[in-house]
Length: 618
Image 1 (cartoon, rainbow, N blue to C red):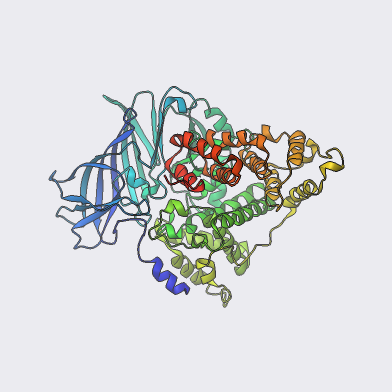
Image 2 (image 1 turned 90 degrees about the vertical axis):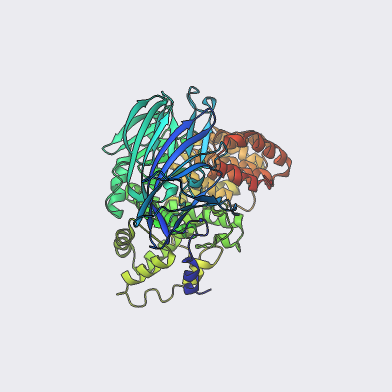
């Protein structure tokens, strides 16, 4: 299809939402929640400010999933409003909720009383035994991409940006946090009520909640880190450079508008490395390596404060506008912090990840397009490394086309300024790009937009990376590949790794994973003896090391692999390891049994993905 034809298809609304915001849109939310750990539900009351964008609009359509709706009334008059739920939609999209609007002006307010269900896909309910302290229960949300509708009846589409306030009542002794500015707390008959306000418009998927036994430590003038008491000091050490990250991001992207930037280190079942909830980034405890070697994941989430949260994809078909831009700017920040060669090393590792991601999905799979078609498809099923790394490669390509960073970085800032507080799709981006560089006659004449946007598989361009740091890793990998264990004792010692940074060690193992012939068990045992790989705390290293063992059919490593997929729920690690275990027929049933025993501790999105990886119909 031509790029123009693609653009026409892209502008047909959000295939992942029932909402019709062009008729009536939710612009503000006032939320009251009572957290019920005994029943594992939220008792909710939400006031929605609805703007009639079509003056003739008589109803508003909301997204819901498994919510129990009690009453719907007009805030102004208290009168009951007619409402109905439509049919369940395919692709995990829930049911549309149509509410007849009260008479009035362009903006009206409706109130909905409801509660969630224990199986709410947005929430992870943890018993006290599943927390670090083992004293108090814990609950946290993960609403991206389309799970907010299972927590709140709302227009759950990136095309709608809204402000919100909230009051959250929790049992005494627990603390509530949200993706908003903290606005005080007060004791109530039911426990403690925490108040929040988010004055910056944002999409519903960024509404976030966490409740647990939490403490904080100050990181800088606008940042704290929160976690359970057992890990809060370790977390404060790990993320001590947060303010430095923020300032470096501001130098590229412009002013940070969200006022507060806090981090919450979640329990291990959190399925992502991080989630860029405004004012409160959620991060996985797998980042607590003890040496700050994985803290740069926070750089990615900080960058989302501009690309994603401030400038937002119109719908999930254009997810690369969130993640590709964020990955591209993240690596620029890393280049400023650690040197340009480090940026290139990170990009080289990302290129490997892109190759593996496309191999896993299939080179002709349309979900490997930069812009995907999601009609009838659950956005969770389309989630992969593709929008991150293929998007990053596309922006790298464009930067080279226009003459390098000196030309492209001012464009990045202009792009953010142009689209901040707004939404856009790929065609909006392309139009702005072309207009911005209109003075560079013919610069984009050779760009095949259709191939970039609409073709599956690897991109039509591979960056020319500076391989200085990677070459050291590759040289060591080559020595292991060429070594013959039958020819004599191992020539390898712990000194081999002394010149390597953590990133270079990751690249070393990543290079070995790409070899056509896996390392033999003899070589793997020799590597363990020389380097003590099993004792390393860096999860990026441990993950690749375990995958090498599984590829080499080293049976002794299977328990460690099964331990890694059950002691934490980060999909980046869990899903590839489960796929590796499934591919090894001798341990397949053991992997499936492990999943079935542990899936109740996993968040929905992770359990759903692993079930697919293990070819289970659940």
